[in-house]
Amino acid sequence: QKEVEQNSGPLSVPEGAIASLNCTYSDRGSQSFFWYRQYSGKSPELIMSIYSNGDKEDGRFTAQLNKASQYVSLLIRDSQPSDSATYLCAVKIWEYGNKLVFGAGTILRVKS
Amino acid sequence: AAGVIQSPRHLIKEKRETATLKCYPIPRHDTVYWYQQGPGQDPQFLISFYEKMQSDKGSIPDRFSAQQFSDYHSELNMSSLELGDSALYFCASSLGATGTYEQYFGPGTRLTVT
Image (cartoon, rainbow over all chains, first blue to last red):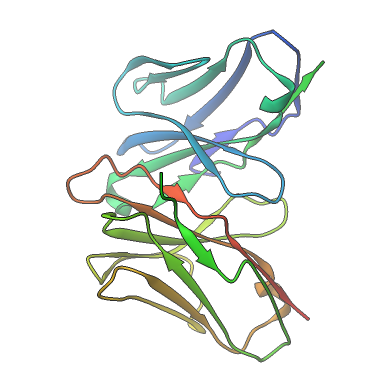
């Protein structure tokens, strides 16, 4: 079992809809959580970071963290075709130092 | 804003050759990380440096070595290259000890071993 699990998708949503991406993690020592967007052949781009339980909003993006359930999600409002990419959930686990442990990523397709 | 710089962007080598990848972190960032991403896979952590000292080590083969220099740039040296080393190699940087540990990735080096 991977330490960070994501549904590989693809997740297809129509333009203008809300895309909901989910991530679960197994290590309760996890302390920092990040969402990256990666276009094919490009580098991961940091979208959101979240460190405490609750919601964090930045523009069209909202990250939600529930440490009791070991669950982190990313909501993308008003999805655009340019949002079509792979979304990587990454976790920093205290006992592993500062490295990031990535999930396998969820492919998002926004249909116009 | 300045980003992480990596060079070269593309590299083609033959089996058993050596390769050196370079990374220039975001100014004032003190921590550098190296990741390897194979086709269709998520990035795998190789090694990191904080203030020029190795801080964490992941699944880096013994054939690979890395260091961080006094100007904070880092180099990943890869020897006895194998076909399986073909991948995207990303460098990321962060503000470590006093920061949020948010890692910002460079554009990557695509290594092809033939």
